[in-house]
Image 1 (tube, one colour):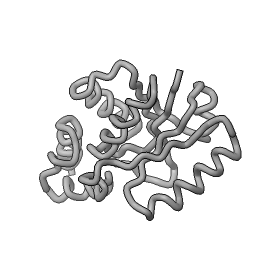
Image 2: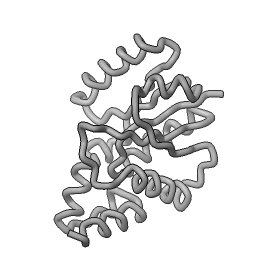
Image 3: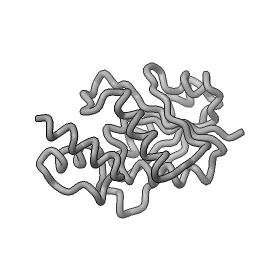
Image 4: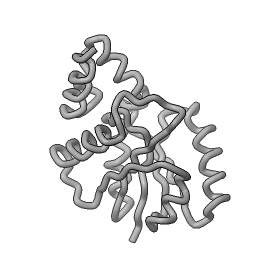
Length: 163
């Protein structure tokens, strides 16, 4: 079985993330979206909220039985090894992403040689898109419907209406 993990903070998940997921779904029998706890970041949504939003998006818009969502904290490549993943799926939007991702892929391979990192590029219409920009547009009252699914838009509106 070809099992890939798609790690990220997903704060929130965007159409760019989902585009990578759709492409990866053609390559893997099973994908685990691995929602990371990153102490270096201060997410808008809790881990539980991010997982719930992703599950809602998958259920309402994608209905993929072979895609699961799981929270994660620790060394990614060790987690991949523990769950029997063959690959780590990473999205590259621009050349600036490549240097960091390349270094991480080399380190992961050094740590656990049998786990491969697969780099995927989103459709060009999503190359500018990232969660930080989406949150900022939503915070300022802008329309994010072209960037995120309805469940994410609703969650963002709910968060920012509380401020």
